[in-house]
Length: 224
Image (cartoon, rainbow, N blue to C red):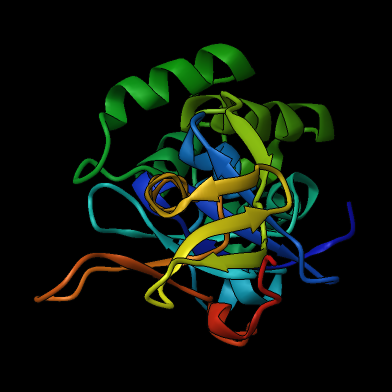
């Protein structure tokens, strides 16, 4: 697996990662932190872009989260954020209140759980933590943000088509599923397992379209 260079919104709150070679992988299940390679659930923006952000993903609340190419990049971004002056001069209680505001979190509970793991007073300034205590804080935040793994699947590519007597595409040959009917292909594409766009016109039946920048399905080799 080569390096991921782009992350896109997938179906049902999944995330689609694109490799430098163009292959795509679907990350589903688990937590947002895991799916986005963003253990601190950092927001997208100038800071996240500076630290490797490759996508901006919408969560179930309608908020945006940054997506990074791998866990290490997201982890390093969280460390870097906590090392900025805006955090370093605060007490740990204030750090958590700033990082996990009450508008989105149970801040008091978050503070209690993190401080219990780091084993220091909430009045301790972040800049006064030892290296070990600082890494303990980073780990505690990652645990509170959610680190449960989900499922990774390589997305199947449409390689060949078959037409019916009217000339319409009736079957698709995909890299992971061999030949499947149009109905099966529509279901798998809706789940993000086939690299295709499901189109639902106001009139007529749903159909599949090739992703932007790809060869149109109508121009793929036809089964004899």
